[in-house]
Amino acid sequence: MFQRVEGPYAKNLRLIGIEAKSRLVDSAQFQDRLKRYDFDMTVQRYSLGLTPGIEMRGYWGSDFAKEPGSRNLCGIENPAIDALIEKVIAAETRETQIVAARALDRVLRAGQYWVPQWYKASHALAFWDIYDRPKVAPLYDRGVEQTWWVDAAKAAKSGIKG
Image (cartoon, helix red, strand yellow):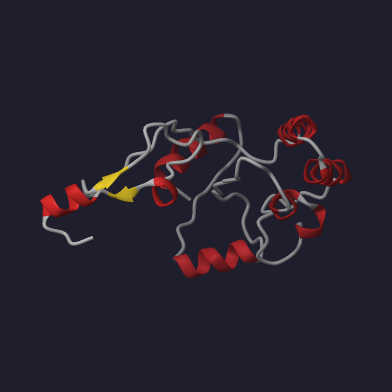
């Protein structure tokens, strides 16, 4: 867990009567404990694409709740969530998919399975100035590998042979 986030969170839990203790473990033990669901709380980043698909089963589906090493770290076993996941996957139009995804989002939030920690609306990148990129960036992605290219003139100027 991130100590700079976990420390204040544990302090706030104590203020409402919940005794929270942190334990620092090495990365191998951390991975093993995640795989076996041997924790009370952990940090997980959920990163999904613009079009939700079968990966949602692994994050929130009942079949993965007790599967060692799955991404269903909350252990969610809920037939309503399973049904909504299938509706999102089987949607025949983008509009019906959006409606089903929003319903799934509401049910997941109502279950209070996680505590959001932070949000950052921008990305910091450091890169060599030999690349060019489209004038319009992808909406929800940095698009570095997919949309950037080596600019031959910039590369030549820097002494790099592209």
